Structure formats: C-alpha cells, structure tokens
Length: 381
Image (tube, rainbow, N blue to C red; front, side, top):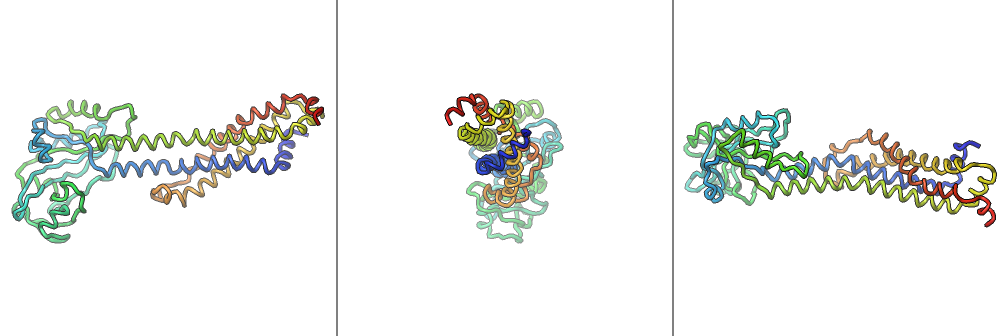
C-alpha cells in the first residue's frame, strides 16, 4: 500500500483528530487574513486621526521675538511668500503638507480678532495629498465660533473687515482655542488688507511620518532648512509629533506581534494533537512496523497527514478570514468599508506556509513514532 493511500485511510479513520488539526490551522490563517486585510486600513485611519491634530512644524523668521511670539501666538516679522514656493518645489524634504499664513490682530466692530490669511496647501513634489485644512476662496471669510457670535453673523451674511466687505461662507465649530476668535481669509485678500505685499508670517508643515523610529525627521528638516532658507527658524510642536510617532509604533508592533503568535499557536496546537495521536496508537504503529513498513513510511504517514491538513486548513482559513473581514472588520476596527479588500496574494502564501509549519510541528511526534521498538510495543499488548 502506498504512502498516499495510508495517509488517506488515516484521515478517514481519524476524522475527529483531523478536524481538530485542520480547524486549528484554519483559525490561525483566518486570524492572520483578517488582521492583514485590515492592517493597511487601520494604519491609514490612524494616520488621518493623527493628521487631524494639526500641523506640528512652524517656520518663522529668524528675527522673530520669541517672547512676543509665544505671548501673541503669531510672528510679527515676515518673510517673502516665495519661501513656500521654494519649499514646495524642493524634492527630498521630510514633510507631508505645507501651508503659508499671514496673521495680525485686527479690530472689527470694536472687538479684537485674529485675522489669518491662508495660502493653498502644498504637498511634496509627486505626492499629491488631501488637504488638512479648508481653502478660503477670494472675497470670502470663515469665522471662528466666538467671532461669529460676537459679530452676530451666520453663513451667507456679509462682514466688513478693515473697510472691505466679505461673504461669510462658513462658521467653524467651537475648538476651545484661539481659532474661536479667528477670521480666516484668502492669503491674497489678507495681504491687501494688511498692506503686507507678498509676505508671510509663517509656514506651517506636518513632518514626515514615513521615517523609521530611530531617525529624527526634525534634525533632518532643520538641516535642510538651514541650507534652503537660512534666515528662518523651525518651531516644533513636540507633543503632537510624539503622539503621532507613538500611534505609528503601536500599530507596527501590533502587526509585528500577530504573525509570530499565530504561527506559534498553530504549531503548538498541531504538535499537541499529533503527539496525542502518536501516543494513543503505539500498538498500531508497532503492527505496521512488524508487517514490514519501514521508518520512512511511518514518518511520511504523519508528515503527509500534517501537510494535507495544513493545505486544507490554509484554504478554508483564507476563505473564512476573507468572508469575515469584509463585512465585519469595518464595524470592529472603525475603518471605512471600502478600505477592506480581499488580499488574494495571501492565499498562495498561506498554502505554502501553513503546511510547512504543520510539517515542522509534526517532526517530533513523527520521530516518536519511528524510534519505538515494535517488539517492545507489541510485547506490552
């Protein structure tokens, strides 16, 4: 009788054991498929949440009085608007978003507000990204929550700022910060109102989130800025940067932890069941040995069984994991449904890896089966 026939008869005769082993392999593969299918989406979702915390880099004039800067919240010294164009056109800078701002304190209807002009947002060359903040059209303004209340303005009204009338196109929700008393306008409009020419108070940026944890994007960016814009200085919002870095590392550790756990758990489960199977069947193994079946045939019987169940478990696990990930993962992990996709490349990986793990886990039980003396086993019976 061939080894394949023995393996097939073994699977049919020991259905319960085969089912348990296959189920363990399938569960491990399904778990990995679910986490792998949602891992990219979870990282993207976390990146969006961290991005929404705001810009964490501020580029200001080196002549800025820092005491006044921290007291007032903005730089009174300016630099040419061309600086942001230089940065936007320079390849290799470690940033993801750039926006220019011009800010001053102004009086409107007897109250003080922060007037802020916003440039369009820039992304690194060849890396178009969705904007982090709204873009105000020319001739219009956005009003902060408290500013709208003090001025008694609503969306669709008109407001006069420094002698010029603007459409109120949006009321920004309450933020609990100085943004609540802010009036946002298009950069070119604010430059005209403040008679500031083509100048900026600062450039805000978001540092690159793609570097390794042991690399410091701030040091690298400062060196790049010293060479490109020597009369500017970089202010770093460290708490925001650290929050982003911590979130990124947490997700990376989580994903790196999953695969070893799934592999070890699967291997331990297969090894345990195969060991129990061998121990319960010493008399059968002894009979086969006495009938002339060699050690290689006995070992191939158990290894072949493990490989077959590994392949079957991989296929079933992939299908089950994919079936669970698409409908249920968005609700569990709070990610967009469209971001979860079937990862067909995982199927050949699982079909190769699962039987390999099962075969390795079955080596010790297989050695137990072939090293027992058949005469000693049969004497005990």
